Image (tube, rainbow, N blue to C red; front, side, top):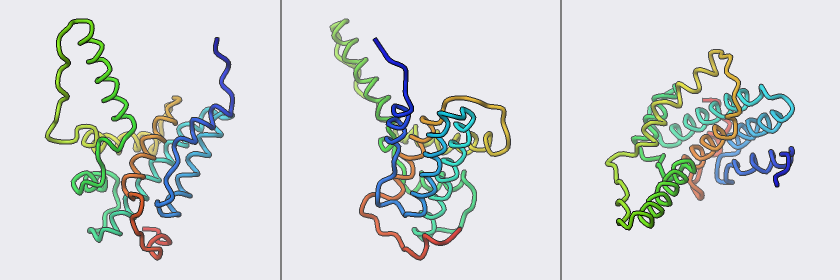
Length: 188
């Protein structure tokens, strides 16, 4: 027997999408706004998309800062910033919880199928490129732009988007990475 979801349950879900302490403070504060917007979506459903938009903005802000800290050529657009992050190896498939969960589900399925059929499980695929990160690099700007340029979309997808953005930002600034404090105050 289940029980109705409460705002505490909603917050406990959102609490899973926190940035680690090694992330520059300015980015953590920016992302925290997205989390608070998502929390408030309990009362105003339409805030799901506002929270998503702010989370995407946090990603873009973090990418610009990472790019600057790495001494790369200045870039202001999300697509090229994501492409650079992908090429530089700042983002890895296994750094995203959604990807890890998909791999685990596939492995469980293979084990069950093997037990039922008696055949050994298929070996895991080892693609030459990171397919999840590559797809993300291509499609995240589209998702952001649909919200940024106006859309009637109303969907409870805020938690999924915040998880994705949280994982992306956490990869850009690995724990222990030193950031230049003077850059944190920079807008671009």
